[in-house]
Length: 313
Length: 275
Image (cartoon, rainbow over all chains, first blue to last red; front, top):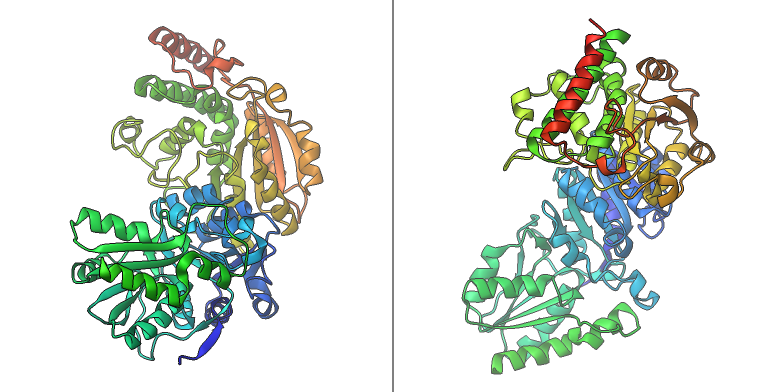
């Protein structure tokens, strides 16, 4: 059984503080989100490298863009729900269109805020940001990905959005794994079907893999941490050689990982079965992140059942 | 640059604004004419921004938040040597970077604007970067008066005040009109000075179409150390051409050939009085 690590958010803040101590041009901007972003130690140790704008997400993004225009390496940190909806126009114009070197950190993303309700969920962020030109979108799965993406963000030098959850995550990747923004990671290789997951749902795919293996079903597991630019080469290679594709995301079934895969399958005339798991278009059930994901067919057991159905089609 | 030359430049700039709008068949005539004297004084007498230093950061910065008055900005940047008049003549043509709102693809432009209520936050970020780097460069931003209805403007003000950004100078092009009508009828924004004061700004009122008043005002900034400045520049929409002044329909009206001819004649007459 793999070890359960820390919440990815904690890894984000630890990595960022490590990088910021080495590079004084790194500036963090928060919107009363220092606590939720696990940035209290950062604020204490590097007070000159943190700007607090209060509860004003539009201003957070605009100020971040201005700091970047002034030569800073900026991390704008705010709950993903507000950051990517309320400030969408600032992201579009001031960061992406103006090509400012800003990394936007969407904290407590997806349905991390569980029972706080849909106001606090971001099941729209992949969809909205995918349609904005010059925007990179990453959803790290485990502590390794969570840390590596921040190290690369420091020198990425173009608009970037990273979403983080707040629950401790299982360590998936063995030592020596390579991480590169835009390049997926093959976690397991099997010939029967391919399960592609992004962000924190990778853990669920991994657990399903173990059960499927006991059932003598061999699947590939891909960590598609970067939603945009999408790793088309790897996807096409696996989809052409798999009887079925199953995608899993903590996001609306519209406009995210699954639809991206569907698009590639359709436009490349690939003969395979596809099933998209995500949040359907309905008034969402209330519950913890874990319970809600289970309810919407993303428990390891349900993933196993759906995988079997897909293979029997 | 001396006052007389600046006044002549303002008239020449007005001619160019009308010329490029007439020739390209689109543009924001009224707002460009109202803010042209402000841009003239800023670029020719106040700000340390030139084609030579623009690629670096050790200089002043200017964000035109009211991006739609871009023809005024294009005209001034052209005169400052950022690009040729031939480049500017591609305005609104297919595949030209000279479009109806400023973009960084055009030399001399700092930030892409056009959606209102964005520029002040970006200017605050730039001013913060100067404070962090302990530089004395200033950051100027021009806002429209109708734009003040955008809530994000006031979010930005709170941060400017909190961080004591006395290197930030906000200029309001107070021409009293917006696309639908008078600002005070569309959505009242007065008292502008008291609003900014209550947000922690030092406020100065001036005549934004009077070169000597503008020169005097910019000599005084920052009015008070530790505080951002707002200059409420009272202007006339369409300023400088009698039949365009204060006319709502000239917000983005393009002059006909006859109107263009009459406007140029008026401006030439004024220019001749300087000879």
